[in-house]
Every structure is written in structure tokens, then in C-alpha cells.
Image (cartoon, rainbow, N blue to C red):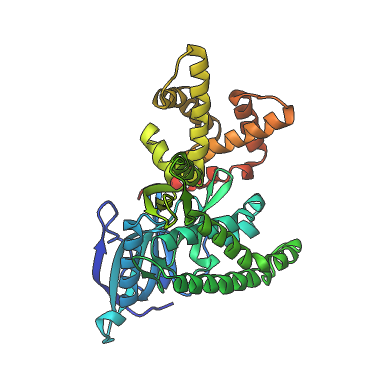
Length: 429
């Protein structure tokens, strides 16, 4: 099949990524599958644009074709999201092609937005259509609500929030959601109540439509369309969860002069939700000596920051929370044994040396490499808690690890991250 000839007009790539010059720039993006061995298939959502994924070693990049002016605007928005540390795909670069024999304004030329594929992520369709992922479906609601709250706190008006524009990453039995598409979006210092309301209305319409479309697909198992009929109400449920979380984050306290301890309680409550508190404002309430307390949150990565500071491990928020809980348990054990207080930093070092690294080393030896080692370790912890609950006692990490390995060999789908790892270890070319 012949395709109209093109040539590469310009290419802007951020440092730390390939130059992509070995790709077939003389062809439109839709024809790359036929010509480039780097093109790979990954789990993906629906898109109104042509999207192609290419692999450079263990890293996968997404190329999306839009008019050059649209691609430039979306690239700038994604850079803005990155600067504000908001959960979204990483913008890598921007390319512009020209078509042979066709004159067009610079902004109307074919543009290619390049982003880095979110490793170990899943589109919403995979959560409904793949066996072994059923337990994550209910987590989708909280993940979507949490994502919208974080984006709105950061001044991001999405304008097209839908299930297809979100990728989900497993996070210790939960899901974390990331924005993928920013084509219709805007960045502001702060969103008004009207902007937030409009975004929520768009989300409800798009989510209901996406689930209706999924339910109509004939290849779904017979029981799933009936299940999805009940899920038509999920859009309203996402809004309800959003509004509860938004209200909690923005709740103000009235403090009496002797209630300074409530400041620390409020900060701990927000930390438990994963939010880092950047500032605390104390203002006169207009009622005598009372003060009005308002907290300003910066991101939802409190436990991630703490874990990285202690260990250097990069993990998702809930993963980090679970790993920190294990360190706290070790800290308590060491304190009891040594009959003196032990700093958490000391417990973290012992935990790395005695639990985390030995467990991952054994998992790699028994099952192969994993794309997300923190998630794999958390799966072992979850298995340990399940076995301990069944046995009515703590079975210990070693016994849980052995049982997890045995079960995974019998049922490979229990640890899909291992399959991701197999794909990610392909050759560099």
C-alpha cells in the first residue's frame, strides 16, 4: 500500500531520550507499523488520533499525530503539569513533518507529540476485559476521584476527563490514575468553583458514555455487560467521592487558644490521606480569641517523599505507605529488643538489608525480573496478611514468600507485573 511521501521538518527532544532518527519519518504515522521494527503493541485506550508506540530497550514511547499547533500546545501543557508535579504522562518531545507537494501553514503541518509510556500501566478497558484484574475495578472510582482532586488543586482544568484519557497503575492493591490527554486543557493559578463544576459535568458524561460503549462490545464475557449496566452510575459515584475528598482537604478548623495540638492532628490526617502540607494559615476568626486554621496541601506524595528520603526507593504512594509501615514494625521490634529508642533511619537500613533486598533477590531468582519491584514486594506482603488471617497468626515473611512463588508458578496471572518485565527486557537495537 502506497502512502504520501513526507519528510521531517523539525524535531525537538528533551535530554535523556533517544534522537528517534532511525524511525521512518518519510511516512505518515499510521504507516510506521509496516516499516519499523521498533513499533510495539501495548495495552491502550481509545483515541481519536493515530497513536503508535515504539520501543527503545526497556523504555516505550507514544507518538500521537495532531496538527503541529495542537501538538505544541499539548506539549506545553504537559510540561506545565510536570513542573507542578501533577500525575500525568511525561512529555518527551515534538516533531513536525511536511507533506510532499502540499503547501500548508506551519501550524497545520502534521505534528507528532512524543510522550514516555507509563510502565506497568493499564487502560480502563483492560480492567474489565482481562481475567485476574477484577479486584481493581472498584478501585477505579477512588483513583479517578483522587486524580481529579489533585489536578484541580494544581490549577488544571481538564476539559475532557474520560476513562480513555486516563492510565491506571497498580499500587499495592489500589490504583493510581494519571492524565494522558491534555489537548483541551488549561492551566491556571487556581480554579474557580465554576471551572471545577464544569470539569465534573464533563467527566460524568464521558465516563457514562465510555462504560456504555464497553458494555456494547460483543467480545465481552456474557456476565460483564450486565455488570456494566450497574456501572452506569459510577460517574455519579466518582463525583461523590471527589466532593468528599475535596471537602476534607479544604476543611477549615476553628481553634481555641489552648488547642494547638489540633494543628498537628490536622496535618497527620492529611498525611494519612497521602497529602503533603506545605503551609498552615492561622487567621483571626472574628470570634474573640479564636483562630481559623487553613492548611495548604502541595501534592499527594507524602509517603513517597518519606520513603525515598529514608531508602532511595521510588514507589507509588500506597506502596510507600505499606513499606513504611513495615519499617515502623521493625523499629518497634528493635526498640523492644534493645530496650532503647531506635531512629526510623536505623530501622530502614535494617529493613532494606534483612527483608526488602533478600526478598526481591529470591523473587528474581525464582520468577524472573519484574518491571515494578516495589509493587511485587507489596504483593508478597498482601499474600502474607491473607495467609496470616487464615491461620489466625503471623505466618512470617519467609513462609508467605514461598507460598507466593508456588502459587504464581501455578497461576502466572496472579503477578502480571512479571509479564511486563519479560517484555521490558527486550533488546536495545
